[in-house]
Image (cartoon, rainbow, N blue to C red; front, side):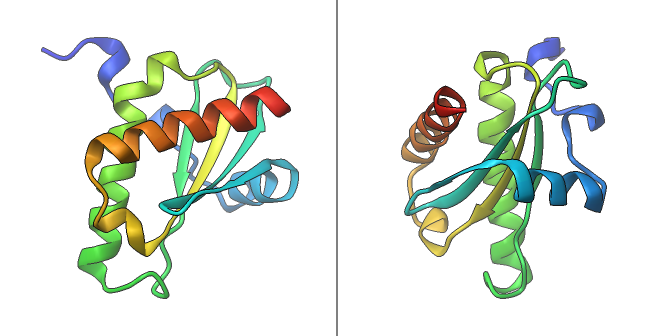
Length: 119
């Protein structure tokens, strides 16, 4: 059985367009060669929330879904160590598909730490 901090529950997701717009408008941005990330503090939320934008411009459905799965898994594994009360929007880049999972995980954690420490 999974422990509670290793689940990717529905309340850990950004779902509404207004939530994505708020993060894009008010969030702090960080660009990496694997992804772009935007982070916004959300005092109403008790846990970090993730939203992923992978448009058709990124690639075919297989590539988009693979990128989203990899980002969700990195988020799920590191959710307990992320700051509470933040909303994240991640936009994958093409290099993400070829990167090793460990480098993706390191870059993700570093990007979140960097954007949260400057806000």
